[in-house]
Image 1: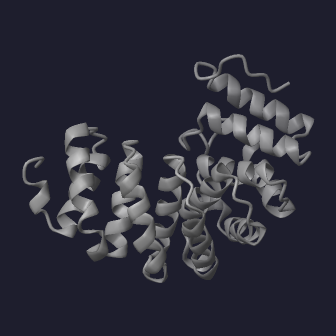
Image 2: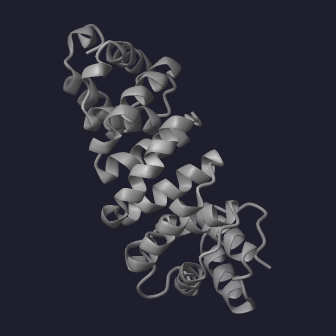
Length: 243
């Protein structure tokens, strides 16, 4: 594949790097070859190819600055053709690689607002996390994400709940109904019926506790409930106090 990568068509390039990322295989020589080959074909990449490529490189944490710059340009031009998942994946990918590109974030935020009704629970969490990670304050987007999240609160994963609450806290943008709904769900200790297999992680608990505390939503009862959850994940926690 390394030797033949220069002969790959656009979809071959994006599909190959996507396959390796999906399998969590980090092969630096291959990733470098695919990056270099992609640079010469990006003008012909479809929106799906662009989103898949940058998601794949972000998933395996492979940094190629020229390629990231090059992916941003056609993404901006074709953003109106990005599907909802492509929008959130692109934002998440650039944030995961800590590669801030303000013009791209501007068009993603505008497109996300237009497509808010079709964004999935994971899309909402990823978008909120990405913009907060960049420190790119966009209150209309955050408020829209919050309202959309509230309408599908039952579909939000623990990570999604923590990411959105954390993002609101980062920018001090309050959405009381959503925060109360998240707090109510956090009242059920990990391991309790109906929540034991949701997959809470220690960092998510930390972020959620900090966010709820920032908005004075972490009362004594909730603190006690989260402490029980923290105890269930004690092997992941180091020196953290919920008291």
